[in-house]
Length: 196
Image 1 (tube, rainbow, N blue to C red):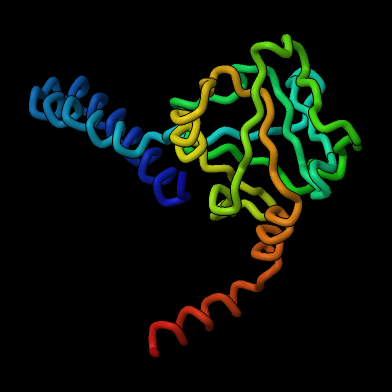
Image 2: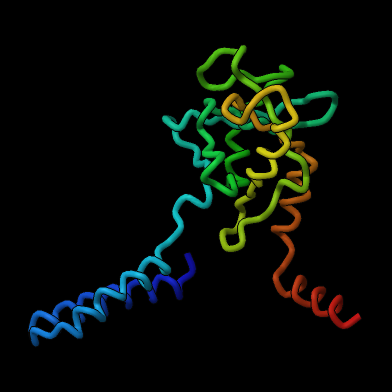
């Protein structure tokens, strides 16, 4: 939620309480009607809490980051319990680049997720165009969940069975390089592209 929306939400709640107080103090139905229309504005400024999901390394979260080599390519595996990701409610799944520093190294081609049986677990590859940067939080990489869910429609398993996300380290490095680009250089390049 943007800072301007926070202030508009707080302001609309204060105005709502003020109008209710005025309607009681003056015993006026006009203030009561005005106060009854204000919840529509309050709902507009409420934050959309279920829009994104964040992976934070906590002991009870059941999420592990594993660095592996599959087919000669280094891969980051995000292992979790099936059902951990809110596929229907979230647009993006964000994780911090620093969380990769706490990852385990494994030479096995597949890592077992925290809990669950191998027969109901599936891995899903994250492609380069699925990765994006968080617009405001630096160092957070997002995975586009609707695109991943769309790709599982043609597979033999569903999103509820997915327990691992596989991301090539080269793709992560490319996304991390976008983080290191200075904002002034990006805006200057965009201006040049618009002028051409």
